[in-house]
Image (tube, rainbow, N blue to C red; front, side):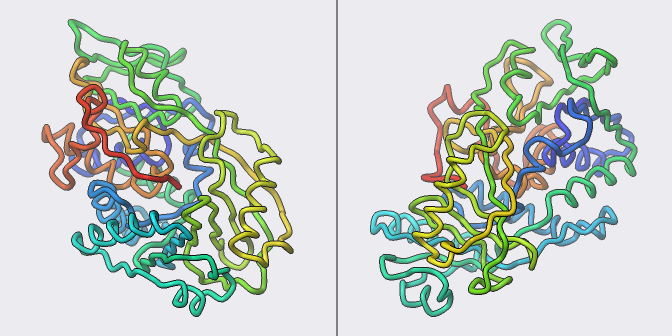
Length: 377
C-alpha cells in the first residue's frame, strides 16, 4: 500500500495499517526532505472535544487515548497536557450555538460547562468580560507537541516494518483496467493495490493524477510567538474569542502562541506582518494586557480546508483502490490518530467501525450531504 503524504495523518494511517497487519508492505511517500514539515509542523497542538458535529467529537474521543498512551506504543511521549479549552463570545446568537453544541457534547459524554460572564471574569481576571454574553469550558481538552507526535508515529511505522521515503513526489498513479496498481516518482516505482492521498494542501493535485476532483483548498495559517505576560498564568486553557477567532495558547513558561485571525489567507507560507498587526489588535480587545506584548517571531504554514470545513475521509468510488484523508480544516493534528484507525478499518475491513465516518465521505458534496461547522480554528 502506498500513502502519499508524511504528515501526522499519513503516518498515522501507515501505523494503524501495520498494527493490524504486520505483513503488509506499506510505503509512505513524502515530497519534502523531512516528514511532518508542511501542515503538521505549523500546528499549535490543540486537541478539543468542543465541536458542533458528532463526527468531529467522536474523532477527538478516539484520538485522545492515543495521545495519552503514545509513549507506551512508540517510545516517544506526545507531551499531551489536559489544560482545557475556553471559548467566549459577546454575541447572543453565538452563545445560542454554544448551548446547542454543549447539549450535543454532553450527550456524547463530554464534560463541558457553560459559563456566565461573571464566572469567566472570576476564573480568568486577565480577560475582559464586560461585553461577554457567555462561554464554554472543557477541561478534557488540551494539547500535545506536533514534533513529538510525528517522531513517535515515524518510529512506530519503521519499527513495524513500514517504509518512509522522503524527497519523493508522486508524479503518476498507475492504473490497469480502472484499478489502482501503484505510484511512480522520479526515483521510485511502488506497486500497490491501494493508494491513499494524505497530501494535505496538495490533495487536489494528487487527485488530478486519477482524474477526480477532491475539493480541498490550501490556505495560509499564521502564528505569533510572544514573550509570556505576568498577568497570564502558564496553566490557562487554550482560550479563543469566538467572535474574532483570536486565541492565546501558552507553550509552557517560554512563549505565548497567538493566532486565529487569518482563516482565509492566500496559500502563501510566508509571514504577512499586516496580519500579525491585526492579530495583536484583536488580542488587545479581549486581553488588555496584550498592549504590552513583545513579539519574538511569527511563522506561517499551510492548512487544507474543504467546502464545509469537515475532513474528507474515505474511498473514491470511481477509482477502485484510491482513498483520501485530507481537508481537515485545521483539525488534522488533533484528529490524525483517529483518521489513521478509521482509514485502516476502511481499507482492511471495507468499512469504518470505530467511528461512523459516512459524514466525511468524498462523495458527500455531489450528494448534497454537507454539514459544516459555523467556525474553524
